Length: 616
Ligand code: ATP
Image (cartoon, rainbow, N blue to C red):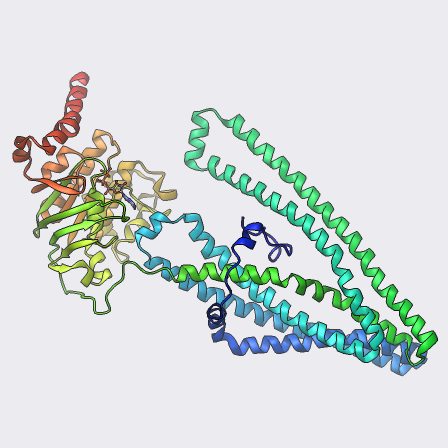
């Protein structure tokens, strides 16, 4: 379970999980953390200096109180009284001003370090392979980018500054106390641990409530995420589950308010306990001080005793915070370890230092004995060889799961082959620069992804400097211009979250227009398996057919019309090419293709024929 939200790191207790997964703090880890601070060492030095000066200065008024009492009030010296009062105020003001400077410097450094770390993490994540994105939890990636790195900021502005300023305050306070009266200082220091008793026990109660309310709030978020998303609401509405979902939500919502009230009360009891305990300390010092002053040491003054009491009060906070530092420390280390784990993830698809960027490419593709597996347990492709000449087209057909999408993903190096080689324009794809390779390949994938923006913005993603004429031409050729023109805002129509405001067919045609703008040497069209109505299908067909006829293309085909448009057909089964040829030769062969034709393609045709007949 993650640490509770709010506050710095929450109360000073580690969860069981945190205790179990305590990070190993090695010299390397510390060195690495400091390497991120290194560019800012001058400013960090200035922060430490500010902390030192302001901590000492903020203790001075307590010492000056002694002078105000002894020399001003008891000594009845007006000048001394005014002098020490003004000095005390000036010192407090000065300490606060330095404190402001320190906070500014501190947050400047913290912000810049997190800025560097975020950029570094984002750049690294961009280099990660599709394998990483398909196998990691999206929430995890976002958490590392956001809360983990924000945690670093808190460590610098909170933990680090706290450690330094608390140590300085404690040391200075102790030195002054021992200077005033070693015996009283000793008594005072014996009392200090007492101060921490109420904090720790109240902390424990609050911690357990916070843990519960965290679980509760996770549950609430879960319900909201599930039921207030587009697909969630659709399900709720269609199954008439509004009442049930409301009851579920209301129940946890109620639990949450109970917990919040309990938490508030725990805070109240904590303050009662704290004020009781913190009034005992000064009383003990007054008592011991009085006994010493009256019986043993008449040089001890009222002012001295007041100073000791004041300083003792100032020690409570730092002692308490330092006692909790260990927890902050472990959490900070865990946070850095998690971030560094991400930095250290190897980049799977890497460009060679001497990668080729040819001036031009003819878009030819050749697979030579290619094999591939996502994981060691199961081979997905085996011994795949074929050659696609420039300007020609190949259709890949095969049962679902036979490895068609996997095969085409190897061309732009979304994954690397595990055996054999893939050539693009005559070069092994692993020798080419990634920007060259991917810049010359256009993929219309099954799952069309559109960003939440306008149609224009989505199209410009392929060619940022495209003119309006080019955009319109691409839309016309992709058979989407009718739709665009019908929209009130035309190209500036917003497509909605992931393009949800558009139909499947419209999205596909926009993505075809996007590829047309990119104008790649090789086009890959992964036909959607999901059913589109025959009009949409026809529109897409009309858009891609001229494309296939004029450029090098690979089609993953699920419909006969697409298969027929290609020059050659490869039949894939269990990751192997089992047949190849033209439609007529393959149908006659009576193999896998014939079976596919009979089960998939011709049935669809038959159905369409029947529907038409019925309509007539
Ligand atoms: P369909 O026609 O249904 O789209 P396909 O022929 O394109 O199927 P692929 O998507 O290439 O098939 O999948 C081939 C096999 O690889 C499937 O068994 C699938 O479970 C597996 N697979 C696909 N993607 C991954 C992945 N990222 N990690 C692990 N296994 C995967």
